[in-house]
Image (cartoon, rainbow, N blue to C red; front, side, top):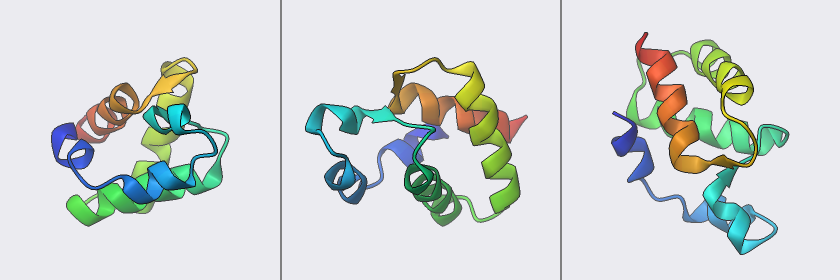
Length: 83
């Protein structure tokens, strides 16, 4: 399930990051990153509400320690959405 999200094109996200090496990490402190992930998930899984995704992101921001690898973070969010 997270593979569908992770295999999407993330180039817009990567290009918005200030440093290239930061592109592989998710920042909970940046609202645009949260909005980007919400839209990415909603595009692939429209059955999940924005509120449910936002709640899953908030929970994973507490669960996954910084620096948060994108892959681990997306896996956490999708796991939360499934439960």
